[in-house]
Amino acid sequence: MWQTMPPLLRVEHLNAVHTAGQRVLTDIHFSVGSRECLAIVGPNGSGKSTLLRALLHDSPPAGGCVWLGDKPLAQLSRQQRARHMALMSQHDTPSLSLTVEEYVSLGCLPHADALSPAVQQDTVTHVLEETGLSPLRQRRLAVLSGGERQRAFLARALAQRPEILLLDEPTNHLDPRGRAALLALVRQRGIAVVAVLHDLSLVEAFADRVLVLCQGRQVCWDVPARALANETVYPVFGVHSFTVSHPQTGLPLRLFDVPA
Image (tube, helix red, strand yellow):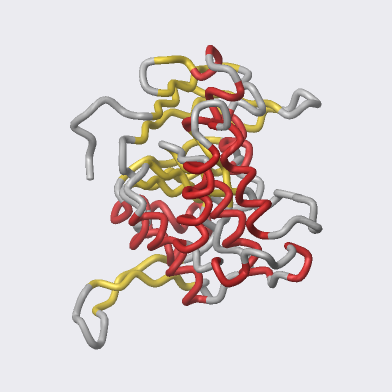
């Protein structure tokens, strides 16, 4: 799904460094259109999570620029950024004494001065239903399973009513059915999504485009069929990528295999 409208998010020649001064990302450039899903993949330590933090401006880049529409992200306040972008992070550490409903309600805070309490409550109710958490709304986070907590993290992010949803390894702690359901839900939302995915087998069905990182550098930004081709995947991940015909549907099915 190649863009015909100006991109919603644009990254130009982005560089990022650790607090110790070590370069983490070098010359990253891509864009994301409205309703487009971008998957970010790469080996551990390639800079995927650092890139997400740079997109939120939580860790300001050492060079380059991130644009939200026609405005540089650096010119927006934290609240303004939060009204447009939401992050579902694997490193979120909420108070476990909160109920699911209380935690998800925190997502409405960036809009607290613009939305009535009734609209905020309607938003929370809707995302709880959407993520299958309505029966657990009064349950405390402390007693949730790993998969239930992941869904709560997603629900809080959706309660921010973002134009752009950032996901940091959102399928952790989920079984295969749960992984597919979560990514399908995100796609059906019809908003721009940037997702760090660890499992390459999930990428092709989810993403419109794929950004491949390795050692902090951009290897590829392309449609899944090319970004996941063996000539890209093998040098980066050390696994072979190939397609076979699905035994029931006959459709192409991409597999990844560790060489003997």
